[in-house]
Every structure is written in structure tokens, then in C-alpha cells.
Amino acid sequence: MVTGGEPGPPAADIVITMGCGDACPVLPGRRYLDRPVTDPKGAPITVVRGIRKEMDAHITDLLASLPST
Image 1 (tube, one colour):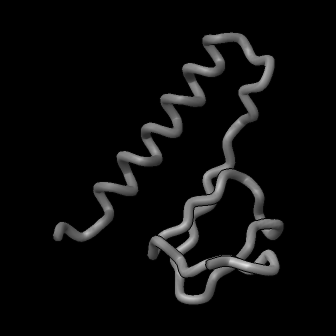
Image 2: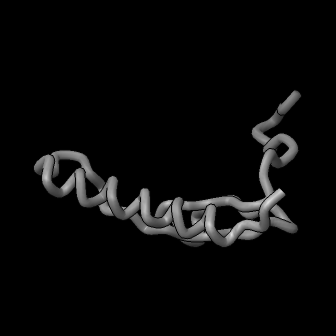
């Protein structure tokens, strides 16, 4: 149970942030990847699709870098 605003136990060894920089909470012993993303709010669909494609590429690269289990 999480109380007092404290984070619970980490569920992953890799934490991916999306542009929060130093404002992101840091959990010791984790690998952090910062992937700044353009805010899609109010953007035309062509821009949103570009953002989606960029995020997909980041995920594909991450998956390729992980050791197989």
C-alpha cells in the first residue's frame, strides 16, 4: 500500500520520461531514458501522426536494445 505520497515499489528497471527533465521523480537503481515529445494538444492530425511515429521509433529502438529472455 502506498501512503503519504511516497512511490510504491518500482515495477520496471527502465523508466521512460517524456520531457519532464529534472522535474521527474528519480528512483535509485533504475535506467532513465528521456524522450521529449511535442505536445499534440491542438496540433493538426499530420503533426499528431508524426509524434506517434516518433514515439513508435523510440519504443522499437528500446525493445531492440533489451537483452532477450
